[in-house]
Image 1 (cartoon, rainbow, N blue to C red):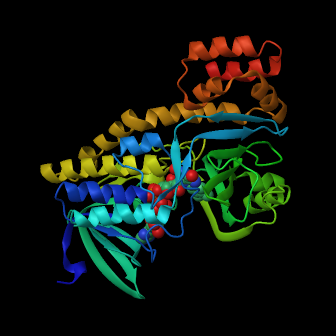
Image 2: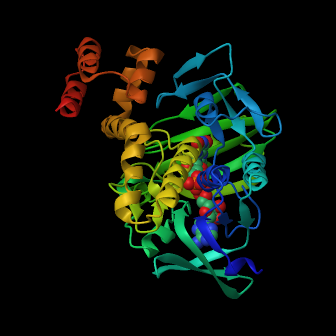
Image 3: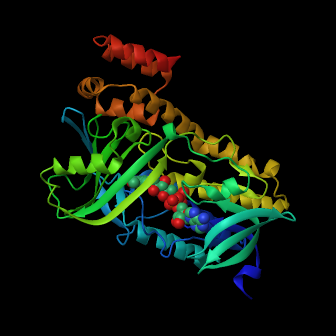
Length: 406
Ligand SMILES: Cc1cc2nc3c(=O)[nH]c(=O)nc-3n(C[C@H](O)[C@H](O)[C@H](O)COP(=O)(O)OP(=O)(O)OC[C@H]3O[C@@H](n4cnc5c(N)ncnc54)[C@H](O)[C@@H]3O)c2cc1C
């Protein structure tokens, strides 16, 4: 039978981390599942710096494998606007830089082993409801084919067109979107290869940071994420900021570029609702990204898995209405969304600080305190005590912090 004549329980659009995690969970639950992607190779091009902390391996029950967990990461070095650095390094691995192409292929292989079907070079160009089902129009080699499903999980990344075609507003606003640009470089040196390196400052990366994520000896993802609105104000785009900075780095400027990646990152603007009739949305398409550092691989996988669990429940109940599916939104906020909302608030606070404020904080706050603020794990009272102690000499900063406590 031609694949487009089959009625699938669930069609997942997008074979990135969220779509593959959803597909795997659905196949595990014995649903018939089709995963469509417009790319011609899973995981490629990557649009990602490929960093993933151990926390996500635990949450997703994954064991790092040398084929795709290519660089052990034991810490991070933060560089302030005045060039001073704060280093935090542990004895043990805190996470890995991945070869995402290999990682996602493994997720895909596992999903297919359990019964999922994947079709590449299949671009969904239209989605509509018909007789209680969803009909997708899909462009394949200049032909349009139709696929039907009881449910669709939209995992189509930041563009998030599928959800919008089915009536769910997933538009990103400019203030909560970052513009990312990155080179995979080789023949570079001058940094600790067991650490992530993050560079801050309005001259370096306004409303964002530059990163070096080491991948193997002499090779790293070197990239930048800045507020998407920044270029309007400074007339420099993400690539120009990155190129300028690389030229100022003796260990990098003579390196060779072996891959170029660019992409948007939804860093906030969480959706109040992540379902509609016959539809669930997950991953970047549902704005499931950490608003402080822009990491989304782990959150996307977790979101995809949760969407799939709710899809399995709806299949069992034979009820594909928004009303029934929307339990997923609440579950996502309970497991992850509320934590990310707190982190968004911390980011809004950090955005108000000047380079001088950053330099002052870098010198007065310990790494553990910085991590607690960034992770949103301090209560408001503890934050107030911390800042009252640290900021007595800086009334301007106290005023900014007070706004945060209101
Ligand atoms: C420069 C940059 C660096 C980053 N670095 C990190 C990092 O170090 N660590 C981290 O955790 N996160 C990082 N992120 C974020 C991370 O890449 C994303 O959060 C993650 O990829 C989201 O996964 P996803 O499955 O939701 O979407 P995606 O990975 O974007 O996958 C979406 C898929 O949908 C497919 N698709 C889209 N539209 C259609 C259509 N109409 N029909 C068929 N298929 C379609 C696409 O081809 C794609 O394969 C970075 C992002 C950027 C841009």
